[in-house]
Image: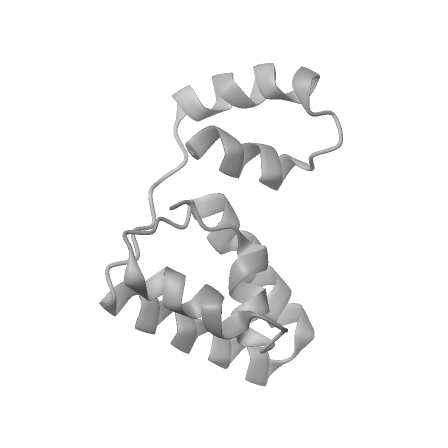
Length: 101
């Protein structure tokens, strides 16, 4: 399963359905692409220092549950260039995560 930053923000904020999301994250092999991790860190840091600490704790806990954080590579960039034409409404991070999926 490829995880986007929005899934982690859902868990961190205890949004409706977060328990199911958390079970999925720790219950099956999951990968959080490096671009999504960067967005997650940026979002939590902008929110507050406490949110940043909670975000770091969540990432550490998920890493202990075998969350993989694959690097963004040149081959992914080629997919992004093609996908931009197909999904012009996606932002750059969304396209990057799509490419890694």
